[in-house]
Image 1 (cartoon, rainbow, N blue to C red):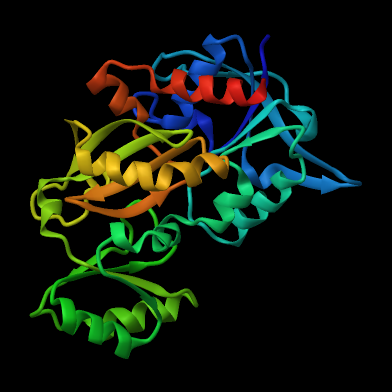
Image 2 (image 1 turned 90 degrees about the horizontal axis):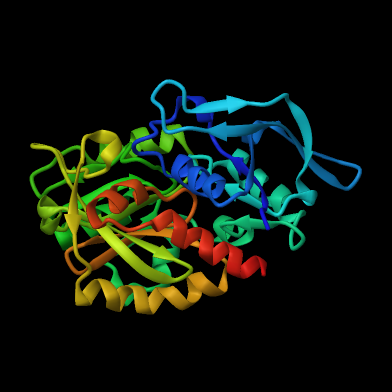
Length: 313
């Protein structure tokens, strides 16, 4: 029996249908007979004990420039839906956090994927702190003296905003760099948030692996190779996706974190692995499933929906 499914995401009319994970998830849902709705996060409303959103029924097609049709705008009672996908992109700011609070109110009658309570409490760069044996040396602080001592200890390091995304604001500082104080001044003038410092891993030149987990189990991986002269491997900033196989170390990492992800309702997760180290656990809006499907010839979106349908049953 078909489900009624809403996608809370950024405007769907502007997505790249050859790369966007949310589009692929919605496309697969439609092929399975589920009815689709779409709304953007700023259209959420709480009133008189109900959470609603102004949105549209949608029909999707894999046609460039003609990939979505909208029905008439309606006020959707989110508590009457079967599944809501929390898929807007970061930044992970107070607006994002507020949406997780509102979506919690429709549970358990409506299944929210990924579970918003744990999305809020497990930001990408903080959840990894629970697994220090899997990660490179890491520090979270606003204290310039602490960051300077970390740099002195490790020589070559990465410095970035704690709640950044897509490679924005990521800096590599080697032993000869003289910009730490200026960068600290810039970051702390723009935000009250801490910074995250990590030991630089030279293995990133061979790629930053994105491993996709479905309900806590690894399903495959792609490698993201930085552009020439670039430290960041994010595809948003020119990283090149390549076919990759899961290694024994990748499976060891997944075995360590998978049970927690399953228990906390994190159905679709993308982890980042450089060399032998886990660097991020992405639960907010992980990407990469279309590239993985093309490289490995598997239906990742189908596996995600099978996990959701099983939980609904």
